[in-house]
Length: 155
Image (tube, rainbow, N blue to C red):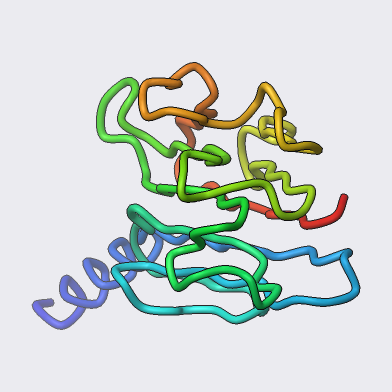
């Protein structure tokens, strides 16, 4: 009986485990899609799946001109997390806050929930990007469990 209960608890925990994937679509023909989480490069072009939330991540296309945290390039800032209360879920934006600057056309879209919600930045003055820290209207939120994100360069 006790072993059956433990197995049931393990199965329920596995079914309810939070998971998110960041997928890159690099259409530029050069550069390396880069994802940094917690000060560490966790992906250099391949999909990245995290069992649990992805918090305060930075993504950019490393073309040789970007510094480690995407300085001098267009960046996508993201947090993918299951909401625990209204408004506490995932949030993503494109940042051109100095020292970040436009480098390549960059866009993102949520998948596996909130499908179609995203942003594109096609020029140095795109209205869908952060240019100063209080541009909070350009953030795109998603209040769905286990949402994923596709980031496209040169779309």
